[in-house]
Image (cartoon, rainbow, N blue to C red):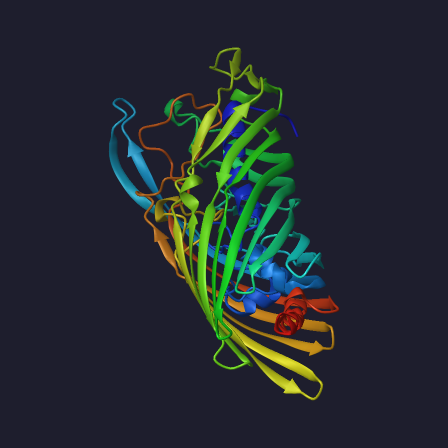
Length: 505
């Protein structure tokens, strides 16, 4: 592959970084924006209602104060997210007067539907917690968000696929979140927790762009022989953040939880490679340099929940959440000395300037209801659980594309755990019902970028218009092993002894 022109670099970074956002939204358990659903086998089984009731290593992504109840334990789970989508593209075709440049007519072009799918790739969680005293528990964790690494075809019915200007593939991306956490019991009724996290890994995206120059009448905007294939790699990614939370237990039958997460600040180097089209203006063109840097923010969030325990065997929680996706409004791209050389009709050397790429995201609200019920089976116990969640989309309709298919959604889940002494086995199944959405191509905001287009046209070619439908299934398995007694149990045993000592005095 040969390096090429300025706009493929800009557009390649833009689209690929949007895909990066899809994968990189890390240590929060959010499901809006670029996530498919909540994460963790047991918490997802409760529909993500795991803020007040958080009490094992899964709490690090929901409310780190819940780590206090995890004791000395190890957690290992993995989930497969099967995401599927269908996009039926529509585009406005305009007829322009070559003398005046004015539009003299327009029509709507309908394309064949295209399907996106995900490879079989289990998403893991690994965590360890340690009891340092009857008041302090610490833990470490390594995991990845429940995101869809979608792949779309490059051809459809023997012709170039209609979504190729938005996304072809995210294969080759590897990202994970590592964190260290601590939970402290200020009093038996009040626990607080906090964590420091780092998103690390690498990202790769493949997408097609057009080398057409529409204002010079050489070609049509989506003429295949003018296509530019671009591959972008972003690495290494090292992005810090942190979270904190609290759990108040006013009585044995009630728990109240509150948690929050800081934004993730992503700053990473990138390289881009492109394959130039065979069109004549590119015959002698070349790109000097391939390095750039990227910068953007990923959202903060707050969550609150109330859990009721009317009887020992039953737990039910209602939780609300808000994700501040408004911080993800632009992506900053800074090329490092990248220049375009010898494109016909352009200056001999053209240095690519920094650019801010609009994302236009907005805040998203969620409501979750879930619970679990314990059933004794001899010396063992079976927990059955269920949950449901409604969440608004963080992507405005005019910014919706196959790269970020996020609409209002309802997620339902069923789960279970089998306890055998210190060992617990978990299972979950969840389904995300995503509402269908239709983007009028006259209102869409995602435009096709031409590699050698110095000035944007008055009527840009919109590439995200059309009908979207999507859904996701999640299947997960996990296990937890607890060594000895938890800090909660130790504190409960210690309390009567201290009481007897006070009575003796």
